[in-house]
Picture (cartoon, one colour):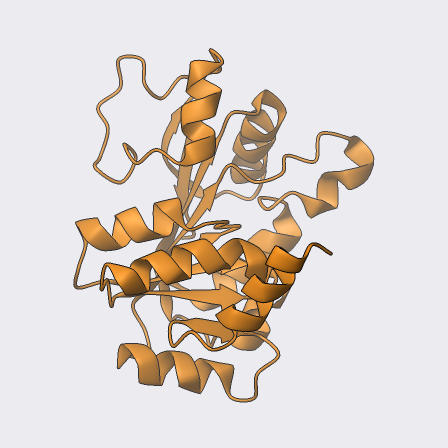
Length: 214
C-alpha cells in the first residue's frame, strides 16, 4: 500500500465528521455529531463525496452522510467539508450490506447511488446496489415512502434496475435513459461528479432511475 494512502487512512480516523462501522455505538456518535436521530440522506459509494457535499450545500438543514467502504476514498471529501465548514455532512466508513445493522429503522429519508460499479456479468448480479437483496436493506432504514435515486452511465444497470422496480411493485418516480437531453431536472439531479463529467466528455449518456417503497 502506498505511503500516502497509509497516511490518509490514519488521519481520517481522527476527523470529527467521519464514522466507522467497526466503532462501538457508531450510530450514537452520528447522532451526537448531527444532533438528530433521523432525517438523513445517504450517498452510497460516495468516493470523494462530490455528490454528498453538493447536496449538503443545496439543503443546509438536511443531514447528509456519504458512505464508502474505503477510508482513503472518504479522506478528501471529509477534509474538504471540514475546511469549508459544511457541518450538515458526515462520512461513514462501511458497507451497504451492513446498513441495517448500523442504522435504526426509518431514520433515512433518501438514498443516492451515484455511478456504482455496474457488475455487468450475470455471475456478479447480486453485487449490484439495486439488487433486491440491497433493496430489502434500504427498505428497513428508509422512512415510509423513502426514495432511492440511481445515476449511472451503464446501460445494463439502468435496465436491470427498471426491471427490479417493476418486479417488486415499487413506485417509479422518474426514469431517463438520457438525463441531460430535454428533461426537466431538479437541482439535485443537476449535480455533476468528477466521474460524471468524464463520462459526458467521453460522449456517454447519463441515466437516472428514482423510485420509492410503498
